[in-house]
Length: 270
Image (cartoon, rainbow, N blue to C red):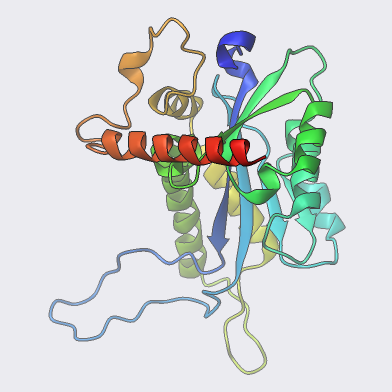
C-alpha cells in the first residue's frame, strides 16, 4: 500500500495510548547510606490514572494529546484554558472504546482539506480494527497500518521512542509539585491527589518537551517513513547494536511470519 500511495512524511501518523498515574513515582530515591527502610513520598493515589493518546507525523509535527479524564462532569474552565492545546474527554473511563476511538479520529486526525490520503500506524487494539473504525477512517481519507500484537516494542514509534522521555518529564513535574508543598489535604489529614488542572499542565509540558527532531528520528528509526528508494535504511536503528531492540531482529521476523500465517489461515477459513 505504501508503494501505491507514496505517502509524504507529513501524511504518515503514528499514535499510541499510554497510562499516566496520579502518583508518578520515580524509579529511584535518596536515602542515608545503610538505611533499612526508604520512605517514598506520594499522595496515596498510585492506582488512579488518566489515559493519554499521543499522536505525531513523520515530519515531526505533534498533534494534540487526547486525554481521558476520570470524571463524567465536564470542566468548562479547564477546557477554556487548555482546550487549544489538548483534547479532553470527560467520560468517566480510562479506557478507549469504539465511540472514543471515532471521536479521537474526528478531533485529532480530522478531515484533510488540502492533503492526500494519510496513513495511520497503530496497534491491533480491537477498536482500531473494528468495522465501525474502518468506516470512520474511510470518511476521513485515512488508511490504517496495524502493528501485530507483540511487535509494538520493535516498530511502534511512540512505544519505542516517545513514551519514556514523555513520562520522565511528567514525573519531574510531579516531583516538583510534591516538593512545592502545594498539596491540599482532606479533613482527616490525608493528602489529596494533584488537581486535574495540574495533571493536564504536566501532560502539555511533557509533550512540549519532545522535540520535532526526536519525532522525525523515531519514524526513521522504526522504518515508518516513505523510504521507497531505501535511502534511509541505515537510519532504521532499533535493531542495531546498543539500541532498544538490539539482537531481536530474528524474533521480530518470526513474529511477523507467524502473524502473517495466522492471518492467511483466518482469510482461508472465511
